[in-house]
Image 1 (cartoon, rainbow, N blue to C red):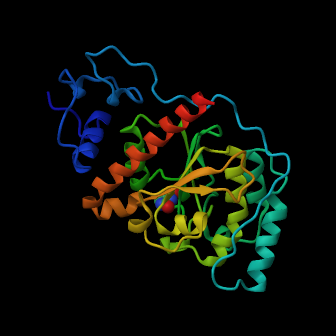
Image 2: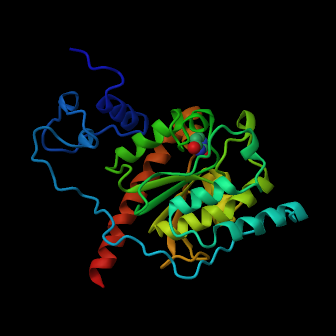
Image 3: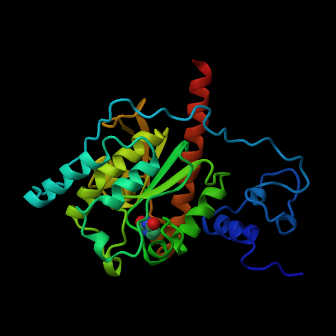
Length: 292
Ligand code: URA
């Protein structure tokens, strides 16, 4: 019987093949078509005993930082007085937020970002508020705008497959963007729009307090790290993200935006290396923690 092309095991195997995985190293052949439809099952062998969940979820929920230290980096060009006012309003609007719901409420009341006027829905985050990894994209697209959730269109489906290929899902990650409304016609968000949203993004990072932050694409790496180099130059490296009210610096890295990978499938090999490095970083952080 031919498996459905949309079967999770088929899409996961397709991702592996496109990423250049051309060798199997397990002791037993795995019939992935026979796997259950359950989340994460595709990464598991049907004949081997199920391994214990290999990625520990975070043990302690992050306490809200007592003194918010929202310090947005200003955009490179001198901001206009209107942008400065919007950034200052945003800082005040979000500085007392103690939960993601508070951030959402502050964004709903915020009038300093013009994108709000053309968007259908506010798009804040999906995933776990206790995530060990936060992934940051650029801006919601059409499907995200319709559903009010980030990365739920074609690039989000690819992102989910990439995460699933190393055993990660919405229990381990939180996914968000540099701006929280869709730019009309999917144009890139302007510097002013990004600057006005940045205090909300910073507060979200402070509250989740992740160990690892992943910038998806150049605009996100510019916003988070202030780096203007291209992704090709930045990927494969780790940067301490310490100018935040985090309990300790997060480890930040950069990889290709999944929408770019859909247009340039040859780069999936490099993205696969990045996703393995991100997974490895969690193991290293666990080992460091165990040594303490
Ligand atoms: N691209 C992004 O950068 N973010 C989304 O949420 C969807 C597509």
